[in-house]
Image 1 (spheres, one colour):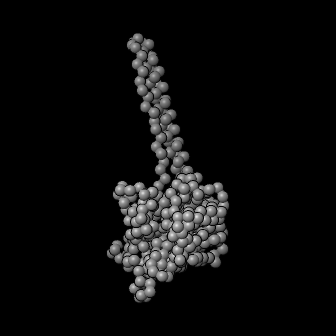
Image 2 (cartoon, rainbow, N blue to C red):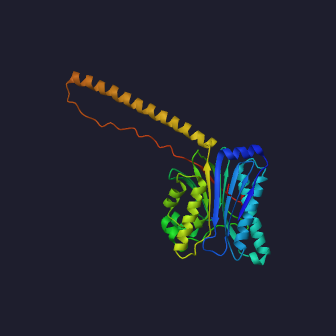
Image 3 (cartoon, rainbow, N blue to C red):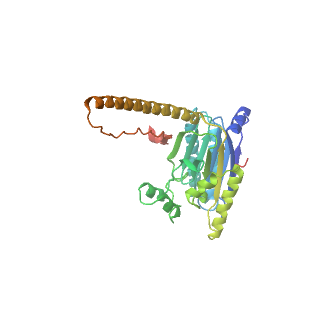
Length: 343
C-alpha cells in the first residue's frame, strides 16, 4: 500500500525537512481489498507525493495503482530533465504505457487502470499533476487556494452548468471517470506548474473515498484544524470511515496525504512584494486624486466668492483598489507523439 524512496543526498534531506511535514493514512473502508496505493520520494527536484486509486478486476486495480506509484517515484528520482514538470509528465506517461501494455499481455489484469495525483514540492514552487478523480487541495485558514478538477462524467456536467459540484458529489454516476492511467496507450495529463506556497499552507492529496464522503466545505474545515497533521489525518479518515459504516458499510477505500508547509516558496515570497507595489501605487493614485479634489474645491470657492454664484455640490467618485488575484500558470501537456507516507 505504501512505497517510500529516500535519496542518499544529505543536503536534499535537510532541504525537505525544512520545507514540509507530511502524514499519509489509508483505510480499506467497506471493500474486500484496498486498491488505493501511495508513496513518497525525496528527489533532486524536491519532495514528491503520489496517490493512486486503482480500478479493475480482482487484484487488477491494486496492481495498476502499485505499478503507477512505483514507476512515477523511480522515474522522477532518476530524472535528468531540468524542468520538474517535464520530469513528472514523462514519469506518469511511462506509467500509463506500462499499465496499458501489461493489461494486454496478462489476461488476469485486462481492463485494469488507476487514477493518479502527484505533487512535487520544490523550493521555488509546487507542481501538481493528475489524471482521474483523485484530488489535490491547497488550503489555508479554511480557504481553498488551489484545487484540481475531476476528469469525470458528472464534472463535465458541472462545467456545462447543468449541475452543482455538490449535486455531482451525490450523483449515482459520480464514479464514472473519463480519464485514467492504463485505459489507452496515450493519456492526457493535467499539469499545473508554478503553484506558490507560503508557511502554514497545507496540501491534501486524496482519493474519492475521502472527498466524496462529505461536502467540500466540511472537508476543508477538517483539514484546516489547528492540530498537528498526524492528528488531523487520523481524525479525518476515522470520521469518514464511521460515516461509511453508518450508511451501510459499502464505502470506498479512503486515502489522505496531508502536507504542511514549513517555509515559503520563491514564488510565494514574490507575491507579498508584488502586493506592496500595487498597494503603494494605489495610495499614490488616491493621494493624487485627493490633492486634485482639494485644489479644485478651493479654486471653486474663490470663483464663487468672486462671481457670487450659488454653491453646487458635486459627487466625488471614490477610487476603488484593484484586487491582486493569485494566479498560477496552468498548462495541459499533450503527448509527444501528438506534438510532431507516515513520518
